[in-house]
Length: 135
Image (spheres, helix red, strand yellow):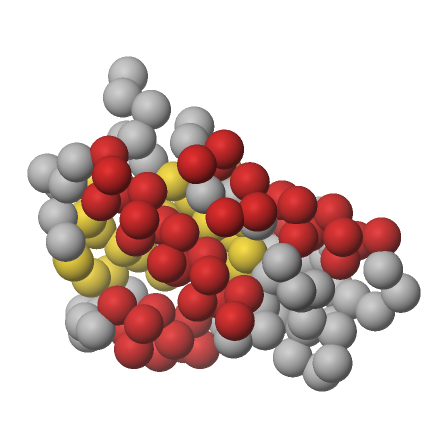
């Protein structure tokens, strides 16, 4: 299996509509009615997390999932797009943690380093002054 085949990004502090708006603007593309878009040879889907729990600290329970799958994109394009998504979400005040086989090639080790700093801090409410710490 190709290590660049799939990536799932867990997003804190946003709902699916806000996430699609943010990513559509960031990627310069429109999502279809299924909250899916194709850009640079990759499919990006925004979904509600079926395992979400209100106010969860565990990133596996955060409300939104962004799934990225390459169609014909080379690994360098896949990594660059996922990095852009992570950075864009963080800059918008949302924690995001990627789960994929190439986390070590992404900013903040796929977001987990920012999550660890946030988890250890006193404020855990992105969007209301408790967003992710500066990298």
